[in-house]
Amino acid sequence: MTTVVVVGGGLVGALVAKKLAAHAALDVLLLDTRDHTLFKVASLRAAVLGGQHARDAAMPRTKMTEGAAPDRRVRVRVGKVASVTERAVMMDDGEEIPFDYCVAATGATNNSPGEPPQDLSTRDQVVAYFDSVSAAVREAARITIVGGGVVGVELAGEIKARFSAKEVAIVHAGDELLSSSHGITTSHFRASVLSSVRKLGVQVHLGRRVALDKARDSAETVVPGKQTLVLDNGDQLETDLLFVCIGTTPNNSMYPPAWLAPDSGLLRVRHTMQLQDHDHIFAVGDIADVAPEKMFRYGVVQADIVVANIVTLSRSGSTALRRYRDPVAIMMVPLGPKGGVSIVGRWLTFGDWFTRFKSKTLFVPRFQKDLA
Picture 1 (cartoon, rainbow, N blue to C red):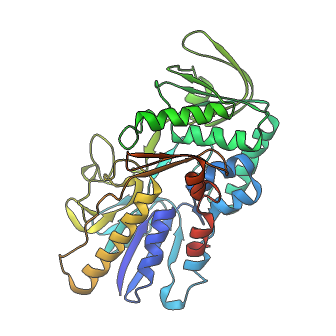
Picture 2: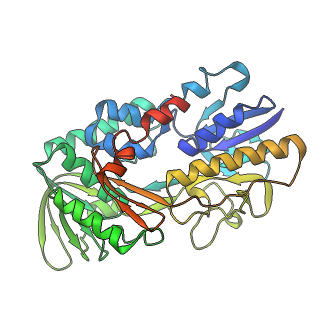
């Protein structure tokens, strides 16, 4: 049998593993630090509301393991990958796992309350984490979010949608919300997001920075407790709960430096999603140096390309492989379950009715059908 090792069990990695396992000639092993798939699209709501929303975001993988037919099961190994070489994966406990093909799907870590600490490996631990963050939200009367990118904006919307009486503030260094998303957005869209956020009653401080002190020094993203935040213009914000939502770090420590793009730290790939210098190693999702913006929709499309190309190579060795092309850009920014703001193809901006396609369920039922 041909062995395929998928490194990383987030949504995209899990989808790749499940689809590859549908081919009986492939023996698929999924390596991940967690015993479940963290569905990050739903993780901010999980952090705000906890409970069933937390359990929804921490998806079990039953449909690809014991719930699948014996010849279509994915083997799962929970543990930390120390390194990946041209022909094997080395685990941190010393086990060496050889492969015929490898798919790198390790993604990136966002500074966000929707990103549980890396040392939480079990579903119960992650659900407990989300429940603890939700408890902090419920107890706080005043909440400050540092960072006005997509994560910070969505987080503010989730809080105000459920707890409208709470005082919520966003402090953002840019002159516009979503200022790092210029590649696929327009000034009109960003202004619409700002208007919608303010209509919810969120205070927005643009062009301002805050001294993070403890949060920055210890890399904490959730800092409960009454505190006074000082902005760079001298203004002060009294808050009961601080969320730090700035920065994204590629999960790339296991790869040789020669495989990485020096400017981004992402894996350099061709349009076939193969690494630049290795035909049998692929990268997919947020760790791959493609796509103008790191959104799960792009990763899902890339997953299909990777699966098709590995199947082609394993069956015939043909070099006539499928090539990835960015789909029409769609960015949906939910502001709670009832709507938000969306942009399609840098031309069309839509409000609640369109964004509700995502915001109502955050696509949880769709991907539960695949995994849970």
